[in-house]
Length: 107
Image (cartoon, rainbow, N blue to C red):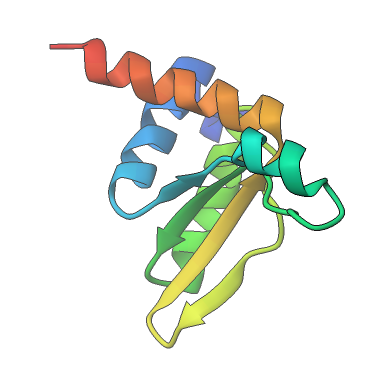
């Protein structure tokens, strides 16, 4: 991405939150269940999942997430009309949840 197209991090955070609110979800593990069942049985992890409607939207969102400092996993087709872009890991998910909470506090 050319430097002229680079988005400031704060703006990238806001745009990532906006993209999430258009059709995303957050998955966090149930720590009690993980403790009881063990990590070999209970394998749910930390994930933010963004959902977009076209392959070109996937490319735009991947650039936006990189500008925001998030590393996305491999995108995949959920249905004929939607694509999912996951972001994995506790640190990335909790950072994104902070941006999401900050966006809700604004008037």
